[in-house]
Amino acid sequence: MKELKPIDLGIAGEGFVYRNLSVPELVEFALERGEGRLSDTGALVVETGKYTGRSPDDKFIVDVPSVHDEIAWGKINVPISREKFESIKAKMLAYLQNRDVFVFDGFAGADPKYTQRFRIINELASQNMFIHQLLIRPTEEQLEDYEPDYTIIAAPGFKCIPELDGVHSEAAIIIDYEQRQVIIAGSGYAGEIKKSVFSVMNYVLPKMGILSMHCSANIGEGGDSAVFFGLSGTGKTTLSADPSRRLIGDDEHGWSPDGVFNIEGGCYAKCIGLDREKEPQIYDAIKFGTLLENVIVDEKGVPDYNDAKLTENTRAGYPVDYISNAAIPGVGGIPKTVIFLTADAFGVMPPISRLDENMAMYHFVSGYTSKLAGTERGITEPTATFSTLFGAPFFPLNASVYATMLGKKLKETGAKVFLVNTGWCGGAAGDVPRMKLKYTRAMVSAALAGDLDSVEYGVDPVFRVNVPKTCPGVPDEVLDPINLWGDRDKYMESAKKLAELFEKNFKSKFPDMPENIASAGPKA
Image (cartoon, rainbow, N blue to C red; front, side, top):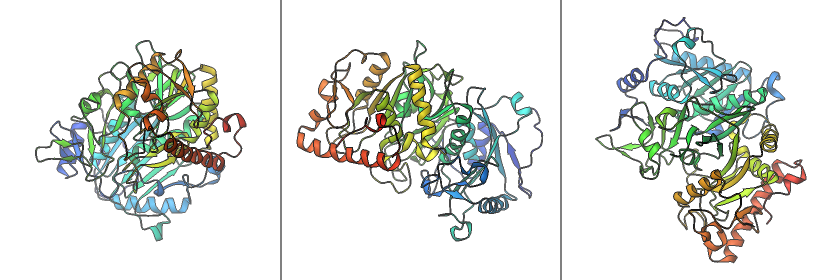
């Protein structure tokens, strides 16, 4: 590699700065430093310690006049003063003195018109390898005059002191949009780095007129793009990794006037219960250059993907080109199909339904799903939740900014919208098995192929969405949750309970929403 111009990280001392190392070099460092071990396929296996998932209660945004009126402050976007931020950052930099650090200079945004440059500074070689694989990797020529738009410093070994630092625990994830900096303290969970990049892009892209989305995306042989919205664990990665379609990306995208583009250069798949037969592309992507988080391996390095001893939120991070049919670069045309994914723990929502524009806006801002065990700290069983835009923790601006943009794009493009329940149906979680993946895949495939465009539909009596009465590859009785329950009274009791939660959430969060949208949701 050509010599790179020197950079000043603000870290004093005799530690060495390892900048833009190759994956083999980073793996070698991680092994030498005792950060992890190799699996039987060559993946680097690490344990992230206390934090095995994101810690949303430890996330803050620096509150300064230049951004104050833009941010949707509340329980998710929590303010912290510039003084507290600078104090924590100074102590973090002092902690890193005399320590070796690893730097990766990368890109976010596969469409060059909207690309942002991120410099990631890591205490751990394994985390630097992770973000090297998860972001878009520059060429040597692009690195010659590289200047970051944003800088992220991640030091898991630095622990905050809540009573002194003005935070909630030893961990803190703080974004300073004005100074274009992010610090991540106390957490060894690599997903905090990835989602910090996403949170920045969700601030930057709307200012460019681009809808940023928490979604996966793929593209068919005919060039038809599709996007899949959903929280972690709802199936974005699994369902977008379709052998018959090329994968654009598994989690974060922008929707521009030209089409959809991946924000990342990699994938971050849940591994719990991973099975080669059900998810061959993800299974085969776990090889040298992949980071496995909190997966239990035996003495020979063989992973047990069913072992949740450390967490249900076991993860694999790998570059998108480890998926054999990935679209490189990660760009596609204007989406023709939009799919909202939910994992309904009540077991009452239809496995698939079609939404008109008003229904689509209602369910987009509602963002109903069930938080699955391990995705966040403290979640030990499926819990009903409403996450605005199917990703509330990552969107700093008012929800109406993103919702208005989606509504406009649906109207302009005529994209079809489907709501798919990848969770339970016919009984509550714990009482019945989760919906068979083969049925969910068949329903999604039918929606993408247009096979549901001309079938007969009925209207769900509680959720008031349009439910197809037939779908290729799926028994008719599976499509109707009432049939699966058997006991109509018990179904209605549970369905109305969930409908009441929808109504309560919507009224509390969106009291000024236009009536055409407000009236398009469930009715208890």
